[in-house]
Picture 1 (cartoon, rainbow, N blue to C red):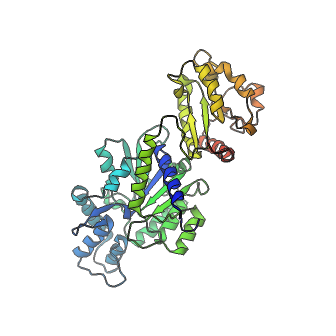
Picture 2: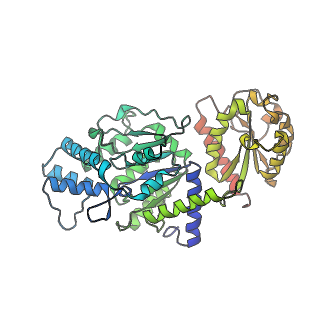
Length: 452
């Protein structure tokens, strides 16, 4: 895709698609150092890391010459080379600077705008926790964690499936634990060696890198893709999801453009797209399209949605399994209709039969509880539903073996039954494998459906 999205209509499609994924909670936000913008003494918006670099240069009385820039990593490395400071002194200096700025600095409004959106995962590549400040202002629940350079085996206990909290994860440490900060080139190199090494207790948490497969759209705001370590970092972050993501990069206005060779590398390795839009413009347009989604009439399918999937299950016993499956299905341009949508629609069985005409994919979530007709009226309709299976006519019935049970032979012989190996989706530790199997197969089917 040369030069990103060149045409206006393609840009609009991009904004609408990303806005929808953000609203569904299926988008990861990566904040680079350039995204944390504050107003300097001249009234200009500057990356906070650059102001920190100037602070260090002034404190240690060094002046940069032609071709040098006030980049935090560069200045920290220069001070170490000149033996003007130590690693621990620099870490303390940076920590104290950030503690002061967190309280005093005027931050760019786009940071507040981003925290109003439903990002479930925010990966931060600067030594701050500024984004959590904005979450506190709107009382949004979150959990903050970080990679500790000094003691990487500190543990990671965030449960992505059982909490509605957002995760804010600092890749290069957190200023409140100054020893965790990764500041110099030497530390960056050691950090990369750790996270790509064989020592499991030094790598980035597997629970973090594995979950990226559940969030297809990734936004990189304020990164410099000419930095050498970013190639190795993304290779580690995306070790399990290279073919399952769509990342986009947006630079700070006025920063150096990503060169052709870097673009080719990131496009070839990670399918990274570089739309010709700067960070501030992107955020403004994303907010506009996100707000437009709120204005859409209830029940109207988003423009990019290719079809509807109906999940049928026992609401009392299997609602958690349905919610988990629904989250994965929303990553493949499907509108997900659940039993909760039947509330207020009259008699449940009649509503289900009507939905068979409106949905292209029907998923009965099978468990012993599914066949409890007293608590699941759909149980008595299962034979009729399966009989209507006709994928070539845009009605695919795909039963999901949610929990262990003995299957009726008529169901077991269905080619569309998932998981393919006839083991239950839940309870055997292979949930992620089976979710990927289901969504990958459905995506190929959905992509062939006529656009609505």
